[in-house]
Length: 422
Image (cartoon, rainbow, N blue to C red; front, side, top):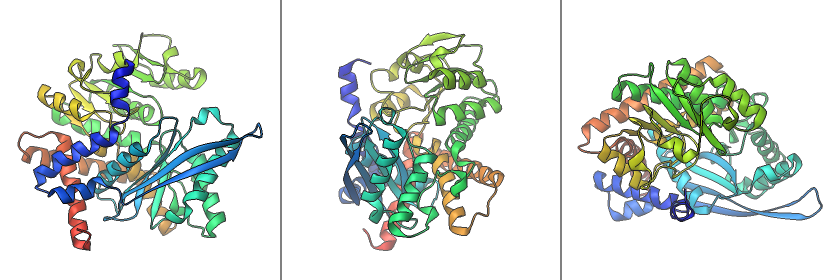
């Protein structure tokens, strides 16, 4: 992607989300004042984090936590560590979490956090210091009944363990439900690590049945082979799909005869990238997105499908594994081309459903098995898809995203009215 296009797309995730919100708001007949209320987060906290590096020098970072809407319950959403994180991006993602939690009928509002940092350039000690300092700055604003953070891009169970330990040290509260995505030893859920991928695969199977005649034998390309992409690939392969293309930040590989997911995982683990897979054709991420397939799953970063490449996409069905991979312009192009797009707030909600099970388990005292948790995640995802599909059939000339957001936004607005917030 050339730099002019990248610049046009990189900073506007919030604008994209507001466009989508206003489109749905008009369909629901919401007033300008209500839409403005929904587009505005309830609180955004910016923090400065200073740590002493291993070289003895002080390193300074900036971080945020956006708490978008609490009408349905405590804020819930991940924390990402990335060199390009911005306040607008964090606000946009917190808004998307509000719709996601509402759509899955979870007792949460939307939250999101981020630190502008390249974690690969920090030592383990520096990463731990950064993580603990973030909680030092935010502990007054989080808690299992206030705001429940979780892993996101470049964060993991170890970071959640540091968060939890720091929170307990500062507050004196052994509130293990304040973070989800924790290690199993600290009340984490074994199913949480793969719950987003399980959810994406479950939704892909349901959508394939409705739109392209089923998942069995369907060819799938997955952009992004981190936690979400790799587990999605494994579950879809078990369901009978043929994974023909994958990529990570360094590039991708395509083989029309199908890829060996186990081997791909080994190659990624040993060499750092799927690009070193021994067979198939090497492609860039941009080429991968416009390659021939039945189902395309963008599971990396936002705004990767936009008005410049959307006309070239050859998939028959798109399922959003990442948050915001299609711009509002791309949505319109896909709608005109008759290509269904299963939106992120539905497709990748398995992660927050997994987090919900972990949170409830911590609150109740660890009473659910991994198999029960897995069954609950699948059931919630299937029920949510059915609700969105029914709404989609009722709404005239609208897409799946509009149907999903209409359900979500309506629930939030009704809750706000009932509480006297509107």
